[in-house]
Length: 68
Image (cartoon, rainbow, N blue to C red):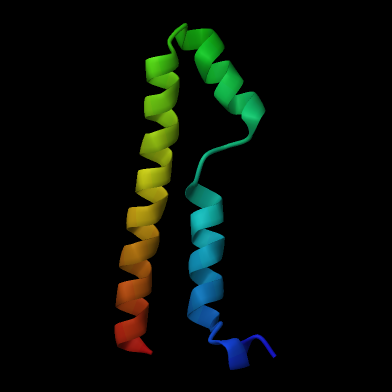
């Protein structure tokens, strides 16, 4: 049913990869802030993790779409 809507195995794999790499739970973010005492460092950590997750997922999707 989902494949009829364009959701493929590659999409599912990329969604799992992104979920594995993107920002952690709120408790982890609070701990980063508590230990660094800086909202700038906390924001950088969150943005960096989102960027890494997006870039790696993008690369995996592009490579996977060329293979399959």
